[in-house]
Amino acid sequence: MRKIASWIRRSALLLASLQLLASPVASVEEKGSLLLEGNVIEAVNVDQQGAQLIVKVSLKNSVGTLPLGFSTATPARIALDFLGVANGVGRSSQTVNTGTLRSFSLIQVSDRTRLVLNLDKRMEYEVRSEERLVFVTLTPLSSSATDAQRVSPLSSFQPVQEQSSIREVNFRRGKDGEARIVVDLSDPNIGVDIRQQGQSLTVDFSKVFVPETLR
Image (cartoon, rainbow, N blue to C red; front, side, top):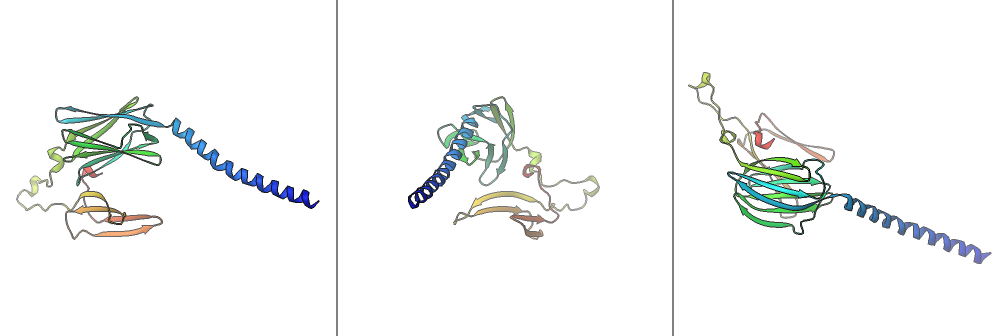
């Protein structure tokens, strides 16, 4: 009876071990199948048409949703996040030197690939898709976007004070690897309120104007 009980205990432990080992293998297989079914960036090409630059991103499958993006001024960059898309180009960066575009990088992290366009100067951009292609059109900033003052005819004989505004929002990595968000304000006396809400930080700027290029 002791031998039978010992055999049952060993069998139960072996069965439990096999179940634990089988679970991670199954999850890896599931992740592999998801990766195979996901989309892939196959090529990135750049074409200059007059003052415009057109970056064409070719994907393996049709484009589901347009990539989300943001831009920075110093350094001048445009970043676009392709969700559920892997980097299939075979390299993470490439020098371009076409117009204001110096180079681009493809950074694959978790469930997305970020395309970063490194520029000589800041440019406006527009994103559109066509089947398996994503087009990023870069155009020089319009003169109206850089105007800081607007004078009303009724106040033409009075000095016009520049409206307080947020000039730039930049992203930095600190010396210890921490993330830094640097906000450039037109007036050092602008009221700033920072508070924590759960796992998020909320920053309020009192009575400031946000230019269209930063929205």
